[in-house]
Length: 531
Image 1: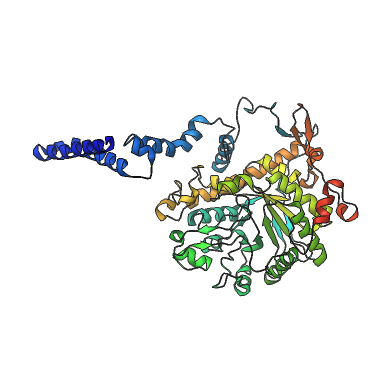
Image 2: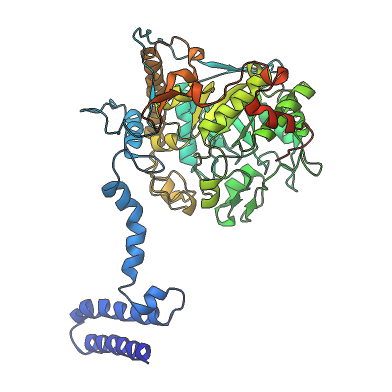
């Protein structure tokens, strides 16, 4: 009964306002209109059944939703300390912005971090620093079966698809890569003119949807693949098995985002929702095996006329990766590179449970892959890329010390083109025009300005990594090792990563697997992915 009385009162209030406006001067509309809006809003809140808060607190209940919408911004700008924000803290975002703008990324008065906290890490400086190289080193990617090796930079643009990112963002990233001489991974969304036009070196990523090289039924089309892989801008080919944010799950691109251009690039019908399956159909019989995986990599390299071919994964089971190592050895086929994507990575939308609870963090995944390849006697044929929250020079050095040959960055590159970590990537309402296909929003991203920022950020970050290595007395990145990274433990003492993890020597698994690896090694089967 109380609810009906309230509704009647609000309606009476609204009607009274309208009558008052009609019977008096037109200026009364200025006062009557807001009153009418409030009254109608209150009526709607009382009769709707979706939100209990609004039914009990009409009109005022909207303040709750308003504050909830503002919470990320309030948290980021007014609550968080400089070093404890998530996914990237303010210090990290600031250093990316400053380097992208060409501003000296220096801070006064010392570190704000608590160096007595458990888990604090540091890199070991030397009492005999080395000179900083005049030119940044590059990493030769290309094993014994590769006919067109590629020299990879220490920091490159990680996988982000056209469609997930705007056309302007893709052009800015690729233009920056072309100027700076580093690689740009296309992501699994296909090879677009926005990737090709600026002339930057490309790593063409092929996902489970085979976008850009797929048949009408969604299978792999070798003819299209061979034709596009021959483009001179395509320097490497990458098969995506899984990604950090959502390993083991496919992607969904809503039909509302599949405009004519995206449909053409991906080879799908315009306006229809596109679903990427969680597994690869092309080497499934019906259950894919490690042997089929490495066999398909060899087929890709043949179709690409000897260009470097590799795969990307977010590791989970050590047994399963060892099964791939056994398949490589048995078939005599190795990829030219493997990109390890940490579970903390990911630029697009993912289910929270997947982002929080599936897959190894980059440190564990990287060490697992490096040690497995080393122990299997395969490491010298395969380069390893590391991807997952790489944003600073110290990030690069740590990953190189843990077994990587080079690194990739996605979100840091997004910061360089203007991302403000609004976390609206999946809504098509990105406030800076980075992750949207809305032309009105995307136009805010100026390609000329942002491409220059991408180049400056990459160059300054690699230079920072080289300065850190020089301070550590390291003249060659190959001389970095886990003994140069230290972590504080519960007892207040520091331990190096050489002591924290089991590191295998070349061929050790083949000769006599250590106890900590023996069970996984014996369970690994090149003919099936045992869990």
